[in-house]
Length: 109
Image (tube, rainbow, N blue to C red; front, side, top):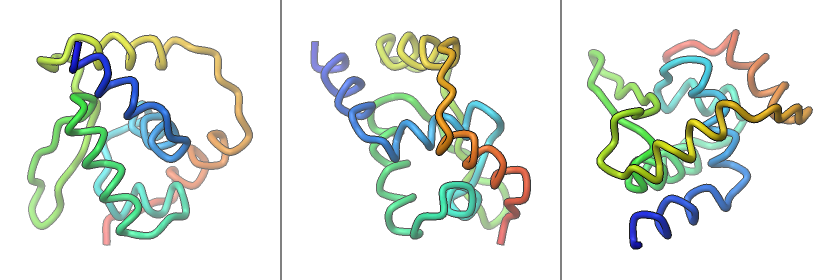
């Protein structure tokens, strides 16, 4: 039950939904999430941490960066199921579309 609560709480924030939206496009480091969402480093890091703690993300070291991606094989089966549901949803929000457009120009710094 705690895994379900943790996963649903993680999705109760617009910033975290926007982060999942860009991570559905590709793996990103914190600086790319910052650029795509036009948010601060602390806000991006805090929300990535919440999503990772809830079981939505995996992280791997890539040189000096930590690259985040959706974790489809998480131990939290609720997080994986909710991520699949989010991936399959026909969300057509202008903010999320702008995030994806900015992601195309985001670079690792």
